[in-house]
Length: 148
Image (tube, rainbow, N blue to C red; front, side, top):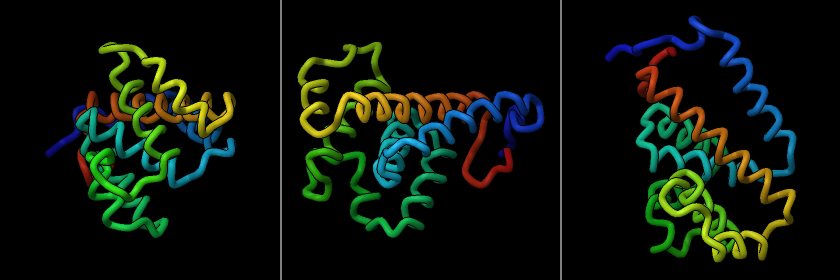
């Protein structure tokens, strides 16, 4: 397999801007495990093998259980996620596929049961960042193990 474009080399400014967004969201009070769950769930929906591989590895390094990683795509059917995590995973799904139905009021209300409005905005930004990374990786033909 070969990448279509090595975006790191071709346009380093794009990578730099994306990394600034990553730095911004990491400076917020968003739980790092929750951020990785967001990254994995969005990457599953978008079919981004590169990001899915990267973030499942990252979550393992953080000490996350194999059950929570392996069953993330079926989070509704398992007892492994907190109610707050379930709210975030649901929001991740609807924001990732926002053109289908927008963000339903019940999803919004569920988020505000667990998070402040600022935290909610941080989570929306986190979802948007991984969706951008997924689109870059897929469009440039990145795959697990590639160098860019």
